Length: 62
Image 1 (cartoon, rainbow, N blue to C red):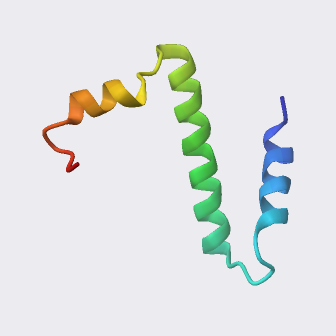
Image 2: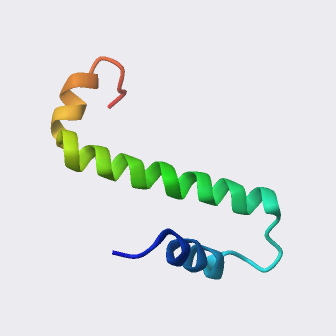
């Protein structure tokens, strides 16, 4: 498991040199949200793509 610092360093290495502080903040925000989502799915369980389609079927356009 990598440390938060290592994750940030890795993310920064993938961004273009002309990235702004705002760009970096956005990517940090997304990184944290994805990490929390994965932890929640692992802890609470997740549903399959097919089950999600069934649950949301009336709102989804085929």
